[in-house]
Length: 313
Image 1 (cartoon, rainbow, N blue to C red):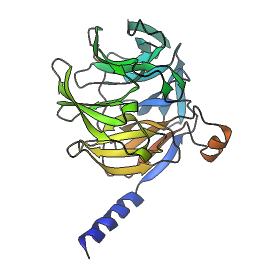
Image 2 (image 1 turned 30 degrees about the vertical axis):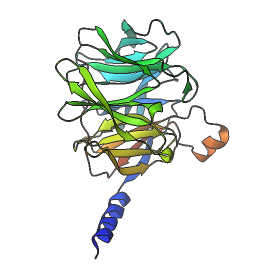
Image 3 (image 1 turned 90 degrees about the vertical axis):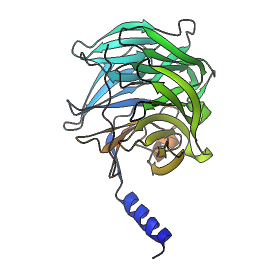
C-alpha cells in the first residue's frame, strides 16, 4: 500500500473516532472563556452580552450563575478562592458564596465605549486580559480602541500595547518562553517572546494566518503536545495549529457557525469544551442551527490539554 494511502486511512480512522456533542443546551448570547475546575469537576464560563458568569456541573447538568452589571469578557479561578473577571473596563473579584462582585482596578478610563474581552492567567499567576470597542453588530466596531493588560498579583495593572481591534485568545507555550495572542480582525495567531519573571512581551511575529473560509480567530488553548487549538467565529470549526511549523494540522467542524472559545477538561483533560454564540442570528439561521449558543464537548481527539492556572493575587 502506498504511503499516501496509509496516511489517508489513518487520518480517516482518527477523524471517525471524534465525537461532537452539545452538552449545555441553554443558549448563551455570547458564550466565552470556558475554564475547567478540576476540584469541583465543573465548567466555568461567561455569557458576555448576557452579562453573567456561569458554572455547569456535568454530573447533575445544573447551571449556577451570577449576574454582572456590564458585559463580562472572561473569568479565571483565584487561588485564594472565588474568581476574577474582566467586566466592563474593570478587573473585579467574584465571591461565589455571597454572590458579590468587588472592583479591583480600572482600565481604559478615557474610553467609555470600551469593554474587556478574553483573558487568561499566566504560569506565574498574573491575569492577562484585553479590551475592545463595543460592537455595533457582531464583529463590527470602531477599530484600534483596545489594549492588552496584565493584572499583577499585587493588583497593579500593566499595559502592554494598544491599537487592538478585538483582543482575544491567549496562552503560553509549555516551556513558558512564548506567549500566543489573537487580535481577531488581524485574522492571525501571533507569537511573542515571553519573560516569565517580569511578565514582559517582545519580538511579536505572525505565527499563522487564517484562510478566508476558516472564519475569524477567537478563543485559544494549548494541548500537552504544545499545539494550539483555535475557535473560529463564523467558521463553525476549531483548528489545531503546530507553532513549530506555523501549519494547520487538524480541523474539527461543529454544527454551529459562531464558535467562540475552548478549553480542555474532564477527569483527564482529554475532552475539548467549545463555547458558542447566537447573538445576531435571525430566526431562519437559528432554525438551521438550533444548538447555537450552546456548549459542545469534543471527545476522541487523542490528545490532552493543560490544567488552567489560577490568579495568585
